Amino acid sequence: MCNIALIGFGGVGKSFVKLLQLKKDLLPEDIKLKYVIKSDGGIYNKDGLDIDELIKYTNSDNEIQNHPLWSDVKFKDILKNKDIDILIELTSTNIVNGEPGYTHIKESLENKINVVTGNKGPILLYYHELKNLAERNNLYLKIGCTTGGALPSVNVGTTDVLGAQVTEIIGVLNGTTNFILEEMVKCKIEYKEALKKAQDLKIAEKDPSLDVLGFDTAIKIAILSKVIWDVDFEFDKLNIQGITNIKLKDLLLEYFSGNKTKLIGRAFYLNNKFEFEVKPMLIDKDHPLYFVDGKNKGVHYKTDILGDITVTGGASSPLNAAAAILRDLIYIIESGRK
Ligand SMILES: NC(=O)c1ccc[n+]([C@@H]2O[C@H](COP(=O)([O-])OP(=O)(O)OC[C@H]3O[C@@H](n4cnc5c(N)ncnc54)[C@H](OP(=O)(O)O)[C@@H]3O)[C@@H](O)[C@H]2O)c1
Image (cartoon, rainbow, N blue to C red; front, side, top):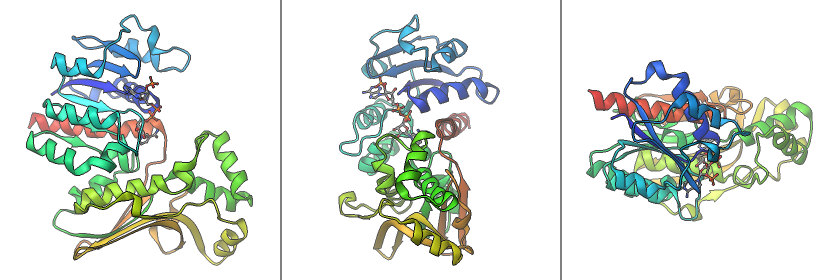
Protein backbone atom coordinates (compact mmCIF):
# COMPACT_ATOMS: atom_id res chain seq x y z
CA MET A 1 0.00 0.00 0.00
CA CYS A 2 2.98 2.33 -0.17
CA ASN A 3 3.70 3.06 -3.82
CA ILE A 4 2.66 6.58 -4.67
CA ALA A 5 2.39 8.89 -7.67
CA LEU A 6 2.05 12.65 -7.38
CA ILE A 7 0.38 14.52 -10.22
CA GLY A 8 0.57 18.32 -9.92
CA PHE A 9 3.78 19.87 -8.62
CA GLY A 10 2.67 23.41 -7.75
CA GLY A 11 2.59 24.99 -4.29
CA VAL A 12 0.77 22.11 -2.61
CA GLY A 13 2.57 19.31 -4.50
CA LYS A 14 5.98 20.75 -3.56
CA SER A 15 4.93 21.18 0.06
CA PHE A 16 3.72 17.59 0.08
CA VAL A 17 7.18 16.41 -0.98
CA LYS A 18 8.69 18.52 1.83
CA LEU A 19 6.35 16.82 4.30
CA LEU A 20 7.35 13.35 3.04
CA GLN A 21 10.85 14.25 4.17
CA LEU A 22 9.89 16.11 7.36
CA LYS A 23 7.52 13.37 8.52
CA LYS A 24 9.43 10.34 7.27
CA ASP A 25 9.56 8.85 10.78
CA LEU A 26 5.76 8.62 10.75
CA LEU A 27 5.66 6.92 7.37
CA PRO A 28 6.37 3.28 6.56
CA GLU A 29 9.99 2.55 5.64
CA ASP A 30 8.90 0.94 2.38
CA ILE A 31 6.97 3.99 1.12
CA LYS A 32 8.00 4.91 -2.42
CA LEU A 33 7.12 8.05 -4.35
CA LYS A 34 7.63 6.77 -7.91
CA TYR A 35 6.23 9.57 -10.06
CA VAL A 36 6.06 13.35 -9.97
CA ILE A 37 4.14 14.62 -13.01
CA LYS A 38 3.42 18.13 -14.29
CA SER A 39 1.58 19.19 -17.44
CA ASP A 40 4.65 18.97 -19.68
CA GLY A 41 6.36 15.85 -18.32
CA GLY A 42 7.70 14.50 -15.08
CA ILE A 43 10.11 12.18 -13.33
CA TYR A 44 9.78 8.47 -12.67
CA ASN A 45 11.82 5.87 -10.87
CA LYS A 46 10.35 2.38 -10.52
CA ASP A 47 12.37 1.87 -7.30
CA GLY A 48 11.19 5.15 -5.78
CA LEU A 49 12.52 8.69 -6.17
CA ASP A 50 15.18 10.01 -3.84
CA ILE A 51 13.18 12.45 -1.67
CA ASP A 52 16.26 14.28 -0.36
CA GLU A 53 17.30 14.96 -3.94
CA LEU A 54 13.77 15.88 -4.99
CA ILE A 55 13.58 18.52 -2.24
CA LYS A 56 16.10 20.60 -4.22
CA TYR A 57 13.45 21.04 -6.90
CA THR A 58 10.82 22.40 -4.53
CA ASN A 59 12.50 25.83 -4.60
CA SER A 60 11.16 28.23 -7.20
CA ASP A 61 14.69 28.89 -8.54
CA ASN A 62 15.31 25.24 -9.45
CA GLU A 63 12.67 23.87 -11.83
CA ILE A 64 11.99 20.16 -11.78
CA GLN A 65 12.68 20.12 -15.53
CA ASN A 66 16.38 20.27 -14.47
CA HIS A 67 16.10 16.95 -12.63
CA PRO A 68 18.28 14.25 -14.26
CA LEU A 69 15.25 11.91 -14.56
CA TRP A 70 13.03 14.50 -16.31
CA SER A 71 11.21 12.93 -19.27
CA ASP A 72 7.88 13.03 -21.07
CA VAL A 73 6.33 10.59 -18.58
CA LYS A 74 2.56 11.12 -18.41
CA PHE A 75 -0.43 10.07 -16.37
CA LYS A 76 -1.17 7.28 -18.89
CA ASP A 77 2.23 5.72 -18.03
CA ILE A 78 1.06 5.24 -14.46
CA LEU A 79 -1.87 3.17 -15.71
CA LYS A 80 0.33 1.23 -18.14
CA ASN A 81 3.06 0.44 -15.59
CA LYS A 82 0.54 -0.66 -12.90
CA ASP A 83 3.07 -0.03 -10.13
CA ILE A 84 1.33 2.31 -7.69
CA ASP A 85 -1.36 1.94 -5.02
CA ILE A 86 -2.18 5.58 -4.32
CA LEU A 87 -2.47 8.63 -6.58
CA ILE A 88 -2.06 12.08 -5.04
CA GLU A 89 -4.02 14.35 -7.41
CA LEU A 90 -3.04 18.02 -7.06
CA THR A 91 -3.60 19.56 -10.47
CA SER A 92 -5.32 22.94 -10.80
CA THR A 93 -9.01 23.19 -9.91
CA ASN A 94 -11.40 23.60 -12.83
CA ILE A 95 -15.09 23.93 -11.98
CA VAL A 96 -16.30 24.05 -15.57
CA ASN A 97 -15.61 20.40 -16.47
CA GLY A 98 -13.37 19.15 -13.65
CA GLU A 99 -10.47 18.39 -15.99
CA PRO A 100 -7.75 17.21 -15.93
CA GLY A 101 -8.42 16.01 -12.37
CA TYR A 102 -11.65 14.18 -13.23
CA THR A 103 -9.95 11.89 -15.76
CA HIS A 104 -6.98 11.30 -13.44
CA ILE A 105 -9.24 10.32 -10.53
CA LYS A 106 -11.74 8.28 -12.56
CA GLU A 107 -9.14 6.30 -14.49
CA SER A 108 -7.11 5.67 -11.34
CA LEU A 109 -10.14 4.27 -9.53
CA GLU A 110 -11.01 2.15 -12.58
CA ASN A 111 -7.47 0.77 -12.43
CA LYS A 112 -7.59 -0.17 -8.74
CA ILE A 113 -5.61 2.84 -7.52
CA ASN A 114 -6.70 4.71 -4.35
CA VAL A 115 -6.88 8.50 -4.65
CA VAL A 116 -6.16 11.41 -2.33
CA THR A 117 -6.98 14.82 -3.76
CA GLY A 118 -7.21 18.51 -2.92
CA ASN A 119 -8.73 19.28 -6.32
CA LYS A 120 -12.20 20.74 -5.79
CA GLY A 121 -13.39 20.70 -9.42
CA PRO A 122 -13.90 16.97 -9.98
CA ILE A 123 -15.29 16.51 -6.45
CA LEU A 124 -17.82 19.32 -6.85
CA LEU A 125 -18.99 18.06 -10.24
CA TYR A 126 -18.64 14.28 -10.00
CA TYR A 127 -18.49 13.35 -6.30
CA HIS A 128 -21.28 10.75 -6.39
CA GLU A 129 -19.98 9.03 -9.50
CA LEU A 130 -16.40 8.91 -8.20
CA LYS A 131 -17.42 7.82 -4.71
CA ASN A 132 -19.53 4.98 -6.13
CA LEU A 133 -16.66 3.94 -8.37
CA ALA A 134 -14.30 3.86 -5.39
CA GLU A 135 -16.77 1.84 -3.32
CA ARG A 136 -17.43 -0.65 -6.13
CA ASN A 137 -13.70 -1.24 -6.46
CA ASN A 138 -13.10 -1.35 -2.69
CA LEU A 139 -10.83 1.69 -2.83
CA TYR A 140 -10.39 4.94 -0.95
CA LEU A 141 -11.20 8.34 -2.39
CA LYS A 142 -10.02 10.82 0.25
CA ILE A 143 -10.95 14.47 -0.22
CA GLY A 144 -10.32 16.15 3.16
CA CYS A 145 -8.17 18.87 1.59
CA THR A 146 -10.97 20.09 -0.72
CA THR A 147 -13.13 21.70 1.97
CA GLY A 148 -10.81 24.02 3.86
CA GLY A 149 -7.31 22.53 3.52
CA ALA A 150 -6.04 21.68 6.98
CA LEU A 151 -9.44 22.23 8.65
CA PRO A 152 -10.76 18.71 9.37
CA SER A 153 -14.24 19.62 8.14
CA VAL A 154 -15.02 16.38 6.28
CA ASN A 155 -13.85 14.12 9.10
CA VAL A 156 -15.75 16.06 11.78
CA GLY A 157 -18.92 16.21 9.66
CA THR A 158 -18.86 12.47 8.87
CA THR A 159 -16.95 9.97 11.03
CA ASP A 160 -16.84 12.12 14.16
CA VAL A 161 -20.64 12.50 14.25
CA LEU A 162 -21.55 8.89 13.49
CA GLY A 163 -24.99 8.07 14.84
CA ALA A 164 -26.15 11.69 14.70
CA GLN A 165 -27.68 13.61 11.85
CA VAL A 166 -26.10 16.87 10.79
CA THR A 167 -28.97 19.26 10.01
CA GLU A 168 -27.06 22.43 9.24
CA ILE A 169 -23.58 23.41 8.12
CA ILE A 170 -22.38 26.98 8.74
CA GLY A 171 -18.88 27.79 7.59
CA VAL A 172 -16.26 30.49 7.30
CA LEU A 173 -14.34 28.55 4.69
CA ASN A 174 -12.39 31.13 2.75
CA GLY A 175 -9.31 32.53 4.49
CA THR A 176 -8.77 35.28 1.89
CA THR A 177 -12.16 36.96 2.36
CA ASN A 178 -11.96 36.52 6.11
CA PHE A 179 -8.61 38.30 6.09
CA ILE A 180 -9.91 41.14 3.87
CA LEU A 181 -12.99 41.81 6.05
CA GLU A 182 -10.92 41.81 9.22
CA GLU A 183 -8.29 44.08 7.67
CA MET A 184 -11.00 46.58 6.63
CA VAL A 185 -12.14 46.94 10.24
CA LYS A 186 -8.66 46.77 11.82
CA CYS A 187 -7.07 49.36 9.51
CA LYS A 188 -10.26 51.31 8.69
CA ILE A 189 -9.80 50.88 4.97
CA GLU A 190 -12.24 50.23 2.13
CA TYR A 191 -12.56 46.88 0.33
CA LYS A 192 -10.27 47.75 -2.60
CA GLU A 193 -7.39 48.76 -0.35
CA ALA A 194 -7.77 45.67 1.82
CA LEU A 195 -7.84 43.48 -1.29
CA LYS A 196 -4.64 45.11 -2.56
CA LYS A 197 -2.99 44.45 0.80
CA ALA A 198 -4.05 40.80 0.64
CA GLN A 199 -2.64 40.57 -2.90
CA ASP A 200 0.65 42.20 -1.86
CA LEU A 201 0.92 39.64 0.95
CA LYS A 202 0.14 36.86 -1.58
CA ILE A 203 -2.96 35.94 0.44
CA ALA A 204 -5.27 36.86 -2.45
CA GLU A 205 -4.53 35.80 -6.02
CA LYS A 206 -4.01 38.28 -8.87
CA ASP A 207 -7.45 37.31 -10.08
CA PRO A 208 -9.30 37.03 -6.75
CA SER A 209 -12.79 36.47 -8.24
CA LEU A 210 -13.27 32.90 -7.08
CA ASP A 211 -12.68 33.99 -3.48
CA VAL A 212 -14.25 37.46 -3.30
CA LEU A 213 -17.37 36.59 -5.31
CA GLY A 214 -18.14 33.77 -2.89
CA PHE A 215 -17.61 30.82 -5.25
CA ASP A 216 -14.79 29.20 -3.29
CA THR A 217 -16.94 29.21 -0.14
CA ALA A 218 -19.89 27.88 -2.15
CA ILE A 219 -17.82 25.05 -3.63
CA LYS A 220 -16.68 23.94 -0.18
CA ILE A 221 -20.19 24.06 1.33
CA ALA A 222 -21.53 22.25 -1.75
CA ILE A 223 -18.93 19.48 -1.39
CA LEU A 224 -19.68 19.13 2.35
CA SER A 225 -23.42 18.94 1.55
CA LYS A 226 -22.81 16.17 -0.98
CA VAL A 227 -20.53 14.22 1.33
CA ILE A 228 -22.62 14.57 4.48
CA TRP A 229 -26.16 14.36 3.02
CA ASP A 230 -25.66 12.64 -0.32
CA VAL A 231 -27.79 15.42 -1.87
CA ASP A 232 -27.60 16.35 -5.52
CA PHE A 233 -28.27 19.87 -6.83
CA GLU A 234 -27.27 22.19 -9.62
CA PHE A 235 -24.42 24.40 -8.49
CA ASP A 236 -25.32 27.06 -11.09
CA LYS A 237 -28.69 27.63 -9.45
CA LEU A 238 -27.37 28.30 -5.94
CA ASN A 239 -27.67 31.66 -4.20
CA ILE A 240 -24.10 33.00 -3.99
CA GLN A 241 -22.99 36.52 -2.98
CA GLY A 242 -19.48 37.78 -2.33
CA ILE A 243 -17.92 40.64 -0.39
CA THR A 244 -17.11 43.12 -3.18
CA ASN A 245 -19.92 45.56 -2.30
CA ILE A 246 -19.24 45.78 1.40
CA LYS A 247 -18.63 49.27 2.76
CA LEU A 248 -16.33 50.10 5.67
CA LYS A 249 -18.97 52.22 7.44
CA ASP A 250 -21.39 49.26 7.59
CA LEU A 251 -18.70 46.93 8.94
CA LEU A 252 -17.70 49.43 11.63
CA LEU A 253 -21.31 50.08 12.64
CA GLU A 254 -21.87 46.36 13.20
CA TYR A 255 -18.48 45.89 14.84
CA PHE A 256 -19.25 48.52 17.48
CA SER A 257 -22.62 46.86 18.08
CA GLY A 258 -20.77 43.63 18.95
CA ASN A 259 -21.05 41.83 15.60
CA LYS A 260 -18.53 40.84 12.96
CA THR A 261 -19.45 40.55 9.31
CA LYS A 262 -18.11 37.35 7.77
CA LEU A 263 -18.58 35.62 4.46
CA ILE A 264 -20.69 32.66 5.51
CA GLY A 265 -21.66 29.56 3.61
CA ARG A 266 -24.73 27.88 5.02
CA ALA A 267 -26.61 24.76 4.06
CA PHE A 268 -29.56 23.11 5.74
CA TYR A 269 -30.98 19.68 5.05
CA LEU A 270 -33.84 17.96 6.82
CA ASN A 271 -36.73 15.81 5.56
CA ASN A 272 -35.64 16.42 1.94
CA LYS A 273 -35.73 20.20 2.41
CA PHE A 274 -32.45 21.67 1.18
CA GLU A 275 -31.44 25.32 1.63
CA PHE A 276 -28.17 26.82 0.51
CA GLU A 277 -26.74 30.32 0.65
CA VAL A 278 -23.42 32.12 0.60
CA LYS A 279 -23.37 35.77 1.64
CA PRO A 280 -21.87 38.22 4.13
CA MET A 281 -23.68 37.65 7.45
CA LEU A 282 -23.51 39.10 10.93
CA ILE A 283 -21.97 36.88 13.57
CA ASP A 284 -22.45 37.96 17.16
CA LYS A 285 -19.83 37.47 19.82
CA ASP A 286 -21.61 34.49 21.39
CA HIS A 287 -21.22 32.48 18.20
CA PRO A 288 -18.11 30.25 18.01
CA LEU A 289 -17.34 31.46 14.47
CA TYR A 290 -16.94 35.04 15.82
CA PHE A 291 -13.37 34.17 16.78
CA VAL A 292 -12.32 32.78 13.40
CA ASP A 293 -9.91 35.52 12.44
CA GLY A 294 -7.28 36.25 9.82
CA LYS A 295 -6.70 33.49 7.29
CA ASN A 296 -8.32 30.93 9.58
CA LYS A 297 -11.45 29.00 8.82
CA GLY A 298 -14.20 27.38 10.78
CA VAL A 299 -17.19 25.13 10.38
CA HIS A 300 -20.13 24.81 12.74
CA TYR A 301 -22.37 21.75 12.53
CA LYS A 302 -25.83 21.56 14.06
CA THR A 303 -26.81 17.97 14.81
CA ASP A 304 -29.90 16.22 16.16
CA ILE A 305 -28.37 14.34 19.09
CA LEU A 306 -24.77 15.53 19.47
CA GLY A 307 -25.59 19.21 19.86
CA ASP A 308 -23.63 21.89 18.03
CA ILE A 309 -20.03 21.15 17.09
CA THR A 310 -17.52 23.70 15.85
CA VAL A 311 -14.05 23.21 14.51
CA THR A 312 -11.78 26.17 13.74
CA GLY A 313 -8.23 26.75 12.52
CA GLY A 314 -6.61 25.49 9.32
CA ALA A 315 -5.25 28.83 8.06
CA SER A 316 -4.72 28.78 4.28
CA SER A 317 -1.24 27.93 3.05
CA PRO A 318 0.17 25.36 0.65
CA LEU A 319 1.94 23.62 3.54
CA ASN A 320 -1.28 23.34 5.55
CA ALA A 321 -3.08 22.03 2.48
CA ALA A 322 -0.29 19.49 1.93
CA ALA A 323 -0.63 18.44 5.58
CA ALA A 324 -4.28 17.61 4.87
CA ILE A 325 -3.13 15.46 1.95
CA LEU A 326 -0.60 13.71 4.19
CA ARG A 327 -3.36 13.11 6.76
CA ASP A 328 -5.49 11.31 4.17
CA LEU A 329 -2.50 9.39 2.83
CA ILE A 330 -1.58 8.11 6.30
CA TYR A 331 -5.21 7.14 6.85
CA ILE A 332 -5.18 4.94 3.74
CA ILE A 333 -1.82 3.38 4.60
CA GLU A 334 -2.87 2.63 8.18
CA SER A 335 -6.25 1.21 7.08
CA GLY A 336 -4.52 -1.03 4.54
CA ARG A 337 -2.31 -2.47 7.27
CA LYS A 338 -5.19 -3.54 9.55
N1 LIG B 1 -3.02 26.28 -2.38
C1 LIG B 1 -3.80 25.89 -1.38
O1 LIG B 1 -3.64 26.33 -0.23
C2 LIG B 1 -4.87 24.84 -1.63
C3 LIG B 1 -5.73 24.47 -0.58
C4 LIG B 1 -6.68 23.46 -0.81
C5 LIG B 1 -6.78 22.87 -2.06
N2 LIG B 1 -5.95 23.29 -3.08
C6 LIG B 1 -6.08 22.63 -4.39
O2 LIG B 1 -4.94 21.78 -4.59
C7 LIG B 1 -4.62 21.75 -5.98
C8 LIG B 1 -3.17 22.18 -6.16
O3 LIG B 1 -3.02 23.51 -5.68
P1 LIG B 1 -1.71 24.36 -5.98
O4 LIG B 1 -1.85 25.61 -5.21
O5 LIG B 1 -0.52 23.48 -5.80
O6 LIG B 1 -1.91 24.65 -7.54
P2 LIG B 1 -0.82 25.18 -8.58
O7 LIG B 1 0.31 25.82 -7.85
O8 LIG B 1 -1.56 25.94 -9.61
O9 LIG B 1 -0.24 23.83 -9.26
C9 LIG B 1 -0.98 23.04 -10.14
C10 LIG B 1 -0.08 21.96 -10.70
O10 LIG B 1 -0.87 21.13 -11.55
C11 LIG B 1 -0.11 20.85 -12.71
N3 LIG B 1 -0.98 20.48 -13.83
C12 LIG B 1 -1.92 21.25 -14.44
N4 LIG B 1 -2.48 20.54 -15.45
C13 LIG B 1 -1.88 19.32 -15.46
C14 LIG B 1 -2.01 18.16 -16.27
N5 LIG B 1 -2.89 18.11 -17.28
N6 LIG B 1 -1.20 17.10 -16.02
C15 LIG B 1 -0.30 17.14 -15.01
N7 LIG B 1 -0.14 18.22 -14.20
C16 LIG B 1 -0.91 19.30 -14.43
C17 LIG B 1 0.65 22.14 -12.98
O11 LIG B 1 1.73 21.86 -13.83
P3 LIG B 1 2.29 22.99 -14.83
O12 LIG B 1 2.93 24.02 -13.96
O13 LIG B 1 3.24 22.20 -15.68
O14 LIG B 1 1.11 23.48 -15.59
C18 LIG B 1 1.10 22.48 -11.55
O15 LIG B 1 2.25 21.75 -11.23
C19 LIG B 1 -5.61 22.68 -6.69
O16 LIG B 1 -6.65 21.91 -7.23
C20 LIG B 1 -6.10 23.59 -5.56
O17 LIG B 1 -7.40 24.08 -5.79
C21 LIG B 1 -5.00 24.24 -2.89
